[in-house]
Image 1 (cartoon, rainbow, N blue to C red):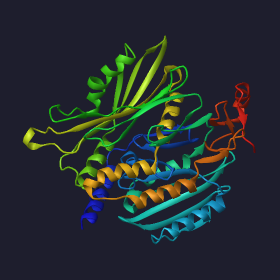
Image 2 (image 1 turned 90 degrees about the horizontal axis):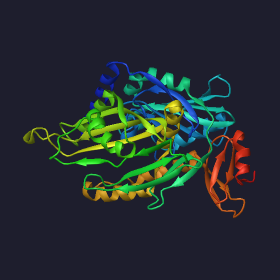
Image 3 (image 1 turned 135 degrees about the vertical axis):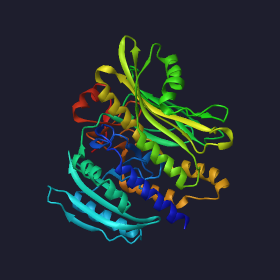
Length: 441
């Protein structure tokens, strides 16, 4: 009964969100994963447990399919016809009542798979397109509960029709070195630094920063701010000025807040999910894009942060006070070409994938209190990661050791330290000049 209530509440919310003011669509380029897509401005890109890249309103919360359709993208090891049939077999083997319909679309060498399956919380409608572009086979799909799918069908149509592969930059693959907690893909030559933050309210949170060699372009996930009931709740837009700006000014003197763009649909979605899951009856959530401008070494720069503040419950006995959290990630780059810097930084942010074993350990720690286990999903995630192959193992030409290289344009190359990179054809001469070696074909 509880599950049915939660599903019904989320379905009602999804319909109400769709019936509100339309959310503007934007074209997002991801030169790390190598694609371009037109989506609502408040949708988020994240890497799912299987290595797929997921795009949805609620993707960052892990509650995908609950409030909006979710797009999935992953590279495919086979041509479209074979990949569509293999995907259909894999989905049938899940044993969830799926009866996939597979057919060519007539749009070049494109194949389509459609079905409705019986998920743990009700039926799920799915549509998958298998394509080949720029010599790469890939799959892009859309899925949601039927009523949510219908409410967002125009966004799904626009996204699938606009999805295109674009060139990738030269890339390298990084694993978090202290606990093997996550992996990420970043442009070759960029520097990484990071830590894992833990507090009473946050069992584990990845704090990191990556930057180009000149320091003028980069991306980061900031340490979360955790506040107890002695600190009044601060909406995200206000926090962008009163909490975040003073901290950023320590790093970039003279930085100023150029503007705040509120994302109310995200806030409504997260508050409804908190209520539906029984985590709080009077939650508060705010999400904004905050833009900052300043100068570094004589170069005008711009910074855009995705800022969220949230409180699970407001205490009526304490005048609405309660413990609350502020989280933010962002990108900075030269003002003159910020659009390219933003696309690159967002691609890096979206590439972060939590290691299933680390996540399982974190869940076990939390679930000792909650009496809950998620081992089956972890296992499914590892199987999907191996099947999707968003990275491929390549033997080092010097040592023979097999190392993971991001899939993208160009061939795998190894630098002098034995680190693998994906180098597009127009950047091969630069790789040769640096003494890199191409992997054997």
